[in-house]
Length: 329
Ligand code: SF4
Image 1 (cartoon, helix red, strand yellow):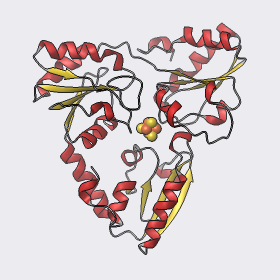
Image 2 (image 1 turned 60 degrees about the vertical axis):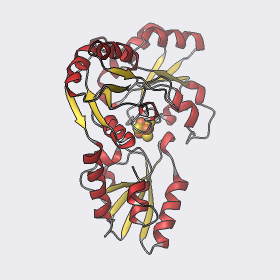
Image 3 (image 1 turned 135 degrees about the vertical axis):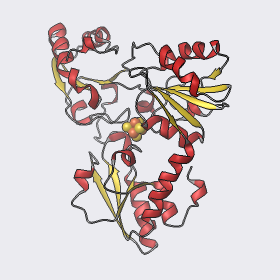
Image 4 (image 1 turned 90 degrees about the vertical axis):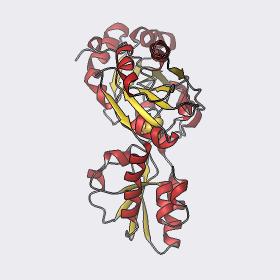
């Protein structure tokens, strides 16, 4: 596939200008897994236009916090697609102890798709008069258009400030502060259920997810999601041996928290082992003889796993009896 066939702004002019300005002779490309199909066409374009060597990251890329640091350490510039730099600048602790931070250039991948049709379709699902409007960086620039569509049918839209992220109304799968606005329902403009499910749990509000690409709607109720998580906690109450998972990806690396959780479990007479790995997948965990896992990395893990029971830190503390059920969400 050619990058020109996709409805995203790959900012090839900015990339070329950066390479020339910084005198880069070797650059890296890191794309989200769903866009690796265009990696070779972007690499060819950059190489033809600038004469620079291009190295493509073949590793998984989970999100804004996941910089391919090994690749970063051997290139002059690393172009990281699909996320903003705010999160990275504030929180990343390089796993490789090198001064490489300024090498990363974020290409936000703004979408050119029209959000208005799916927002108009979503109106039928909105019960209240006031709506919180949120999105990922791909559509966040279009939230004002969404707001106008809602205003035309008498709905007041609120686009909240984010505590940690670059744009108003922007969310990540682990950061939802812009959704904490006074409103009846929340309208998430974007794809998938990971972000809207997290928002529903975080805000305790009904979330209407409107996908501008497929024009599909999905309504997520906090109660139903909470019940699913309570079930996961209940299943873990009989577990005797836990694996505490640590991701070695730079922005998710949290060994101290994992060790502290393992200690708490041992204090309660349970077995707990800290397991560190780069890609935490079910396939990579198959060999371990454990009853349940605790995730200290990206919250998405719990969604991706079907064979193993995976709990968050707070959920695990409920299992250990050091936190109340009511306090997790
Ligand atoms: S922890 Fe997960 S949701 Fe949060 S920024 Fe990283 S990849 Fe995204």
